[in-house]
Length: 151
Image (tube, rainbow, N blue to C red; front, side):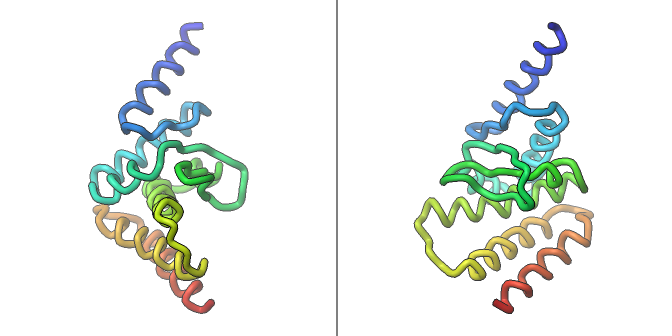
């Protein structure tokens, strides 16, 4: 009983740390990693963090292949994005998906390739502000930008 109460207390306190963004109450480790990723975003790019909190009210999880958005205010993160790789990758995923939310909320209609190029460019710009960021994260954004430029 005490353990459950402590987990519930942590979940409630951690979701309040980041204003209006509510994290789905799942595994303790998942919530902790998302909180850490949000802290990285807030620490290294206040403008990106402000955009995130403007458009995102919920962060949920799903078993899809790629992280995505649901509706106009929720980011859905895959299990792999939560558990695999560094926290900087999880932060990049959240930043990328927040840009998609910005498109949805502002009724910006462009070709999917154009939107993805903008989202990966936004993600890359954010990653470059993190000291000692993993180089493969930058390389991945560049690879994806080139892939979508080919469409």
